[in-house]
Length: 478
Image (cartoon, rainbow, N blue to C red; front, side, top):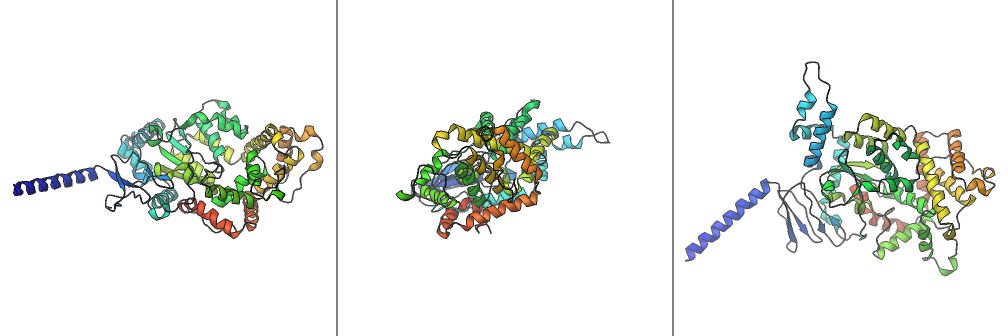
């Protein structure tokens, strides 16, 4: 009887071993849940004793692992080896459509090379920029760094917002203060054949974002899972200052300054919260994180907004190399030359003409609507818009505000007139791209010189994932 029992146990162990090998060969991976989760490769066997194993049966599926601080998933292989099947089919179709011309010998090498998924993968790898491979591999490395996930300072639960291009088969993570308005304009062009679609570049930002809401999709949807994703990033120092200028200094968020004012001593509070400083803005963020509040999307960490460890990240568009990266991304998804030229023209040749009107319209309209709740309007508001354009590198620092051109209410309440005055000044005093870059950097350096060291330390901790994952320096602008 004992012998039979031992034989039975040996057979059971053998069957289990064979099944494990089979699962491994079929690309099955395991993820462990809990604060010490680990997504690991086939060669790894290190599983926490107190963790729960979750099996994933396909490299194309994602399993969410919840820690005490955030939600994340790590994948077992590099992004370029994980093209979703729907994406490959889409690429094959697009390349076939674009490969009608035959070679001199009468054959069509391009069409022959992509008539199956293996050929499509080979071509995609060949077209994949080296810099993008390095960036995505960096994201993957950070996703596997369990030590970094411990003791996260920010525990907010921001909703992801992915937009899907049905025409070109890719998804994009929308991140405020990281070129999101331009991406919404680009999406509108990509998904519309109407010749008048180019007018989207002159619309108010709020209008642009409203027009493109129909392209959003749920994070857990199959379309998102079966598409390659464009992730965006921006240096946290720069993004935070940009958010402050937009939302606080130009009063685009009327409740923000009032909330910040509540942290001042009673004697320093007043009914017109128009003098909030950048120091106060950063301290407000730290306070919100300390109270375990979810931060506003315009300054919440990008890691929480996009969940890059959970998606088929394929292109990382960095704000610091925005034009080049956008072009790479659109070409990677086979956007035709005509649409590509339209979008890139707005980004390069006509950037000022397509950007300034929308910004002016957004700021003025927002403050007209909320005039009862703010004391920044009229000429005072136009002066702030003027200063903001200086900070953003559109206007030279030495150009004074033309107060003589704004003597009456009709003038400073007229959006078209204000836009014309600003554009005329920009065109009379044109700056090179390098001059604009230096102006923005100087404004950033000057802003952070005023910030206390203890504040900077906590800000770096809150945004440590963004600094690390997207390879930004934690040394303050200098």
